Amino acid sequence: MHWQTSRFLIDLARPQVMGIVNATPDSFSDGGLYAARGGALAHCEQLLADGADILDIGGESTRPGAPAVSLEEELARVLPVVRHAVTLGVPVSVDTYKPQVMQAVLDLGADIINDIWALRWQAQPGGLTGRQVVAAHARCGVCLMHMHREPQTMQVAPMEGDVVPQVLLFLQQAAQELRALGVDSARICIDPGIGFGKTVEQNFALLARQAELLPLGYPLLAGWSRKSSLAGMARQTPGAPVTLDVRERLVPSVAAALLAVHNGAHVVRVHDVQETVQALRVLETMREQQIKVRT
Image (tube, rainbow, N blue to C red; front, side, top):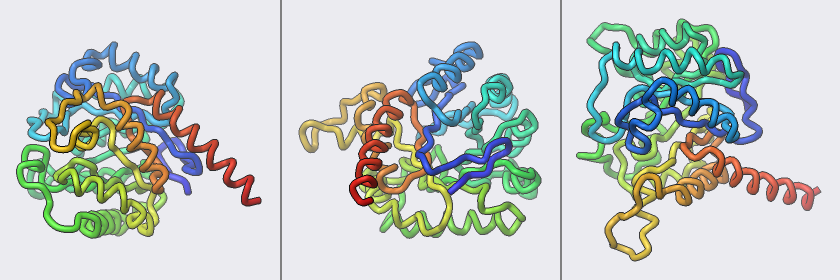
């Protein structure tokens, strides 16, 4: 399987590690750490040195309850980082839901639009949509994510019932609507949206039953890195308060990424690139030995 993007045809025979670059002062995991332009640029290069295959740049936090950022502020945060990242020789993804930001970063040479709204958002009825921007581009890749409600309200009233068929239907419809506009299926990737309006149990149901999403035929991206659900599962005593700070979630984050790949994920979006790459190499080596035994 391959993922077509603006400048790269990404071979997904090997799981791809997407390194997160937060050009924001209020990200839930590393807010402010790389918000300064120089810090974000250096972080791009460090992630590549650590083994990242793809860079994912974002200028607005989408943590639960996060306030929206103006178009002007997001552009000011993101464009200088994208301008540098596209010179580094790897696919560059931009995490945004605003069509104007999508257009601006694609004009700079970005390869992938990674949208938590699955291209549904528009500033006003009848305004420009992400679908229009992506459909007008000849080759850019796009990742369509499932989100229940919106960042300000998604955890106030999470989803109800069996989450897997609901997520599957949403992603199927979102992809079909994009393909109806002429976007080739090879450009589309899907993301079940771990943590976006789902309970801890629902998040783990999506991990355990992730294979049910694969028959849609699109590459699957998994974003478990440092999510609060991991802190809850990492309690030493059942029922005890969650005590893991976001930067103490390294081990459960790597474990979740490994399990996601084991269950068929093609891309994992992570903060801790070096450790994830090392873990995936262990999995790859084991699989190589299994193939040798079978042959």
